[in-house]
Length: 204
Image (cartoon, rainbow, N blue to C red; front, side):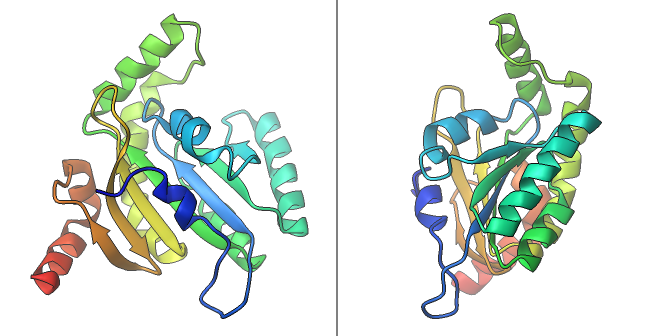
């Protein structure tokens, strides 16, 4: 089974054009409590030290957008973290010549996310609006088919199991499914069930 360090290998600066090198935008997305921060700190921070966080605060988001535009102008790779995909961020990066990659982290049950957030807050950690968790989970899944066609790479990771590493569920390159786990969680089936069925039929 492919492990989480593969994210780093798949986010090297490459492109289909021979000899070309492009900066990378890596979107790290998942509802609060999905484990995005842990994925970044444990597996991505070394390769991508520059990380921007989407914010619900208009003032903070304006500052983030300003930094993002500056990074795009100078061609510096960075991670953009959010509860949901910002399609404008993807399109802006593509226009600027970036390679666009997305990592989506989810669990089988939004209540699991909620419980993790409550535990985190009780331990002095960062608060997140728990009333939005279920809505963000559902909306994020609805975004995935469009994100699949907007990005060069899309990787789905399941983080349901407590105390274990995230598990790669599927990897899509240039809109085509190239890897699929043997055990597929229900949330991933909701987003790409037809694609998975067709891929398995073609591979059998």
